[in-house]
Length: 88
Image (cartoon, rainbow, N blue to C red; front, side):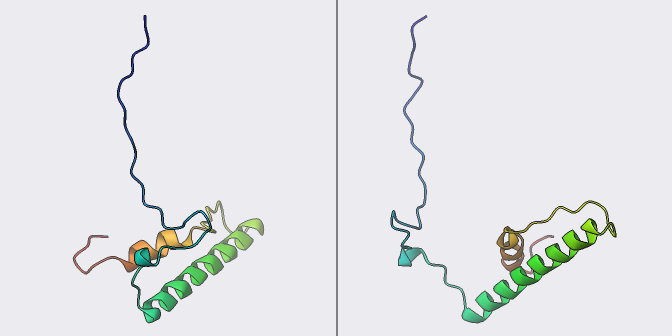
């Protein structure tokens, strides 16, 4: 059976950093400095809580722990973006 081409396609993507690692200033998020600092504090708190849980687990004081070290923004930012009418 001869090979046939199913179709040609492409995937569009958004590139924020160029090949040299420089950010496109037009794509920079417009976040108030006060909010940015609050987000950072929540991420630090999340990492500290993770570390405490890991330490307690290693001491046998609690059971299994699923740390999210390195993924703090994945938890903090969606919560920051919730509106009053959003369901949680």
